[in-house]
Length: 456
Ligand SMILES: C[S@@+](CC[C@H](N)C(=O)[O-])C[C@H]1O[C@@H](n2cnc3c(N)ncnc32)[C@H](O)[C@@H]1O
Image 1 (tube, protein in one colour):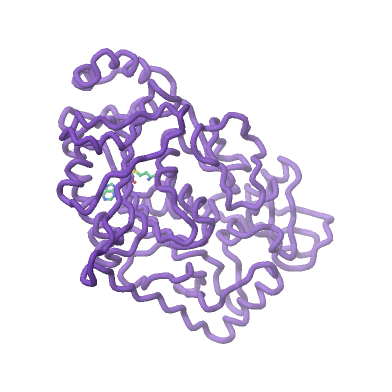
Image 2: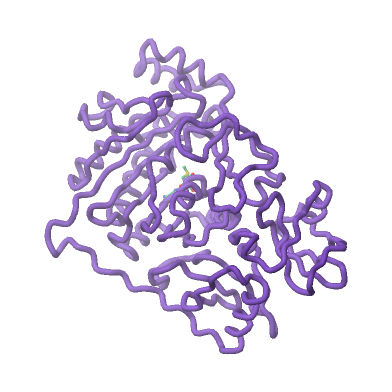
């Protein structure tokens, strides 16, 4: 890999003797990783080994995910390189919190945060570019997340809509990507000597909105996948000088993780910058990352407390439609406690809103909670998202695919012939103990409802 000379000179100046091992590490292959999804019913992968654990977090392992394999397609695993997994650990979301992932596509950190929240509280996961937001939304769906709202908005508009709303806000900033050079060779083409400064300017702009979105007493997490001090320590130095209500917090790092302190001498020298964390490829089996966590001061007087946000009103479904939805759940998913007070229709699609969902009127929403299904003429058809979010023991009828051949037939979209003792109607198709999709049993055949766009 040919690194730009200006890049090499910059890090030779910054790192001195340590630049040799650093530049050498960038020439070596990086390690791949994945996280197990604790939201699924069955959490042991079929094809992947869980022998070698990433040294931080509960769910991370070394290994390469097959995008067409059962583990990926059922949403049991999320492919994420090991260093990126540390960012989610620093967020440390708790069940019941309100968390915002401001620059979220394709969803690595958001799915990690959703694992921590265990379906309780609200995750708003946002991506400014609509096409990337669609990919984010698909990943949230595959992961089986029920308590997320996926939006595609400029951070400034989000800050106007939900000021001071979140306990935790993550900005995983669009950055110069130096930490990804060996994983993504294209990142080298974008790089120039001025690029880190240009990216830092953009980070500052997004942070101006991010600080408004954090509630008093809440937490802001800022991360990049670059080594550039302009985007890392210098951006944090700028942040806590511009917004003195924010204080840099210490980050726990396991002893054997190889994670290093931030470098105050590369910014304004403030000792607090050593509390930030740097992940260097010469020190650990992962790519380059930087992460900082800052706490916002609690409100000191009434004027600083944030007004409660209006809640989203559920939709009043037509009585006949509501009855069809209730009948479907009673017959097909008797183990799913459907809260009809949270149903919301978008056109003919019915969603189950997250609990205490904020007013959606000022948000550009792609997904508001869990898509349950679609109202068709005189019937209700379940959505693929529902198959991925429920546990098989909630369904009245389950068809477990028991061979690779059957799995391939199903994901290809073909009908399955079976002697199984099933009643006419919807059946949850499972693979390796987790929901994979829907089928409709009619006359000894399982009619395939795996979405056309996902078939392969
Ligand atoms: C580092 S990536 C996020 C990766 C993601 N957090 C994950 O773990 O999968 C940064 C994201 O910021 C988005 N972005 C680019 N410009 C932006 C802007 N001006 N405001 C907000 N997000 C932006 C990019 O499209 C990109 O998806």
